[in-house]
Length: 153
Figure 1 (tube, rainbow, N blue to C red):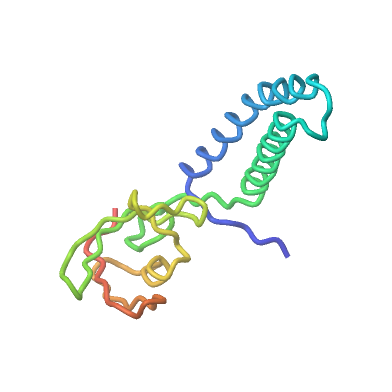
Figure 2 (figure 1 turned 60 degrees about the vertical axis):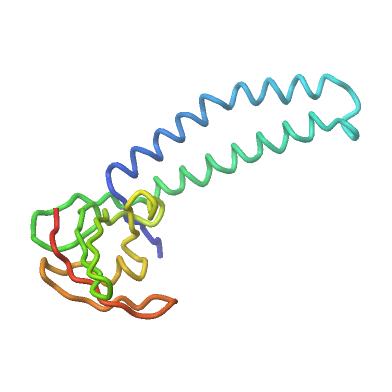
């Protein structure tokens, strides 16, 4: 069974851009490796070892990102009034009455510092498919808390 990873169109484009950037950088890294190899004895050649490792990391990252795109399920948002991947939500945290805004995104795109919460995180899972005004309990590792969905954009 193949497991498809949900992501926003924006997240898909970001991965495509990172792949393009890595492919553009690959020839430079290959030249560095070739120059280091030309220095001679490979057993004690730190430049060669580092260049080989760096190229290996680049190749590994490319394979990982290409698999992410291969198994991506790009979610197009629907205007159905419910929380879903790609939508932005304003949440009121009931314990301190503070309102915060988050975009619900795929696992690869999650970045709390920039207001992006994964759909399968404790917060994301609790609010998924809920309408405006819904009050839900979030079961987090540090304990449970209540949030109310103030607005869905």
